[in-house]
Length: 238
Ligand code: FPP
Image 1 (cartoon, rainbow, N blue to C red):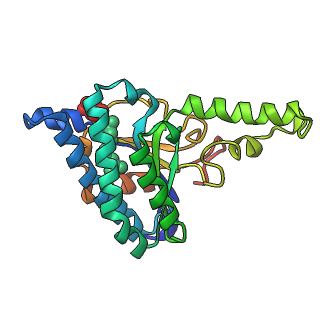
Image 2: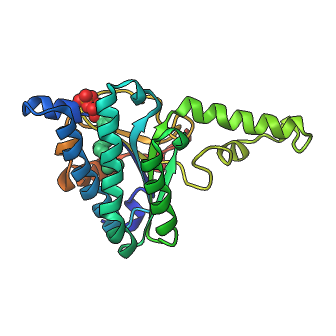
């Protein structure tokens, strides 16, 4: 696949772990464990293909409402995943990043997250961003508050708030907007993910449940993306 036809930034709403577990008569947590294996496969393939940014919706602000045992299991799974993958991330030049209100994560998970971010900070091949305790509306509100404070202190004129300024105040500051947004498990919803950043993203929804989403499924999504005519509101070139 040529580099020009590849998205620079792929964002994924990983959905369907619970349904996968139910289908196999397993507890939900086993679906999340299998989902973590898909994370590994997809991160590895994106890195090999030369995709510069991969952003995964791993835990939403709304996910705190799940039963405590499921939240605890997800947090433990995240910590063990990061510990297990650290060596490989470093070797393959992956830089870990996190967006969201990560201060709400349990202390032990947060420590592993921050240690992994620090230890992979020199990675130059791909930025892997995990959205954790993330909500798009909350992100926009945090940006509005930051800009309002600048206006209040006189450091900024309201007229100077441009799209670029605003983008630079989001958790994703400095990252390109996603070119491709993938959602698994067949739901046609955005679920409060990257609301500002996906204005012009191509959306790809597949019925495949996240634990079944592997290399072939990602390649299919990328091939579908190549066929799209991205006009950004202008007229096409053909
Ligand atoms: C959605 O499935 C998935 C999540 C809420 C969490 C995503 C977590 C993982 C893929 C595993 C751990 C993550 C990392 C980064 C190692 P769901 O439970 O909402 O599925 P359902 O809609 O079928 O119930």
